[in-house]
Length: 188
Image (tube, rainbow, N blue to C red; front, side):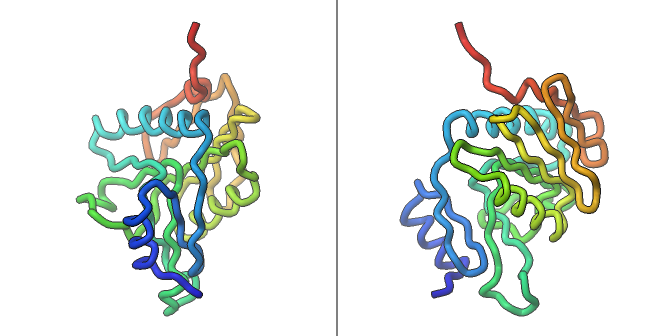
């Protein structure tokens, strides 16, 4: 059985506690992230959103914001994918007004945060799919290795560690984030 975006919307209405993606006609149920991974995604989203909002540069969303990706095969509406990165950024000139629906566009920046049960390869494949379809930057945050890997189509990976600074000068001129700021603090 092949599912559609309408089927997914109905299931999400009935079960808002589930995270789901539509991948080539199949609904993929995704378990919740572990606490640390979600905190890292929230920290990045907060740092990025505070900077973006004050400059009115675009929109930053979290893991529940669905993007309808272009058809994998031309003319096959059943192959439309609905995917949700952990954090995303869309420039203001590409989405001037927010929508009360899934958006049919690709984020300029999409971020995946490896959770405890994630395997790296599927995360990298998701990032590559977004890049091949038109996203400018994909970022993979790995809390196990304390690394941030920046992906761009047909360019060498950039691997950042503590002591390094994440920048995206072509999309977010002037924005900087110390990699060490992503990791949750320890309280006394």
